[in-house]
Image (cartoon, rainbow, N blue to C red; front, side):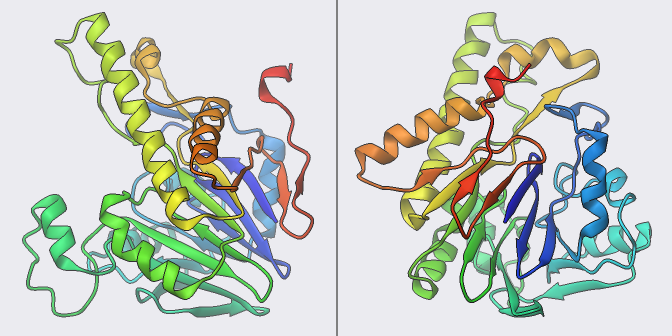
Amino acid sequence: MITNLNSATQIIELNNIKILTDPWLGEGVFHNSWYGYPPFKKKNLELLNQIDFVYISHIHEDHCSEQTLMLLDKNTPCIILEFSEKSIKQKLERIGFKRIIEIKHNHKTHLSNEVFITILAADNCNPEICNKAFGCFMVDNKKGNTYQIDSMCIIENHDNVILNTNDSPYMISLETIKLIQSKYNSIDFMLVGYTGASLYPFSMIDYTNEKMIEARDITKTKGLNQAFNFIKSIKPKHYMPHAGTYLLGGTNWKLNKYSPIPELEEAKEYLNKKLENESIKSKCVLLNQGESFDLKNNITDYIDVKKTP
């Protein structure tokens, strides 16, 4: 069962074990500039009381919100990749979490009740990839850990395999994708990012209106194509675009007209058309807040957002 809460925050349930991913329930992050949309409904807070584990992919506030983490039981085990840099671990300790589980890259780990998680560094723990992408000075990495900030995970039982790519950049993830392909013949459900958390073109103060619109459309297409490349490579049975439903708030609200983030229906239409052209039969799933997709029966009670009052 996949239950959508907000952006990259979902509840993945297998064998009655519930894993909350990348907690951010839409309050202002990044200096009160980002807000989840649609706003999180307080009635759904009760879902947080049933969580068995929390998985956090990386340190960014829209995936690791302190305000949201404060709402959780501090005895809940938090699962993270064994990063070389310990920012997430230190943040969780400061908030008061008592059980922080660091898992090595590509180490399949039993959680409970025959449910397993494998966390994969976006760069496959290859320091040369990190160095080429970011000019990282840690090229003498001897521990085999990652200095990348992004990770993805596979959550599975004996019946289903779920892949969550989070914010992992496609080009940095090519080795990791090959690793996944070598380990799994089929992915039942994939959560895939369809946009980039970019300041561009929001931060361009010298662009004309026409240049801003042009940059918006280019950036939007770039994010959608990254999602397409992930889907094309993995060919999951079902996929769900996620990790991108937010608006700018505060004094920056007028910049939303230049937002490079597609509406979910727009993303579905774009991706399905490209997949159809490639004869790829992956099916798109869209969920409103609090709605679920049943992996066993492949059904959802999805309601068209545009028709909802």
